[in-house]
Amino acid sequence: MNTRYCLALDLKEDPALIAEYERLHQRLWPEIDTHLRSAGIQDMQLYRLGTRLVMIMDVIPGFNFEAFDAAAAANPKVQEWEALMWRYQAPTPWTPEGSKWIPMQKIFGLADQPAPD
Image: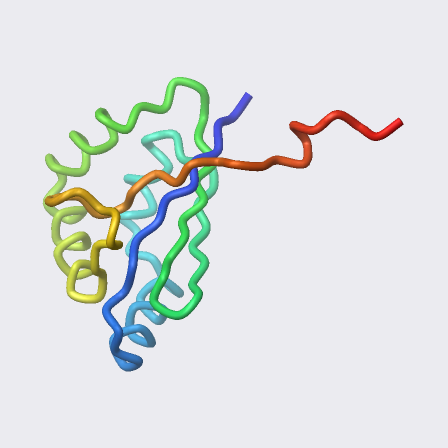
């Protein structure tokens, strides 16, 4: 069974930068696509409200954030992408120093609820 993660990050409050960020995500660099898929990410979606971003990741069993981060750190093209993205991104008020995307806490799931009688 796959696992779903939901993460949050902010964008800088600049409409031109936000538009450029969205444009860059319309055609993901092939090396980034390969990096994500080879790590076991089966689907990734980004949603935006104002400057707040939410990322939903569906990953295969055994996905490991530490291994994913290590592979990213060892890949020059991924590092180039991350440096470019940081031009548009900003930490949320709850983001620890030196971090970017922060996992969100799931507080509700309809499928987790018992069906009504």
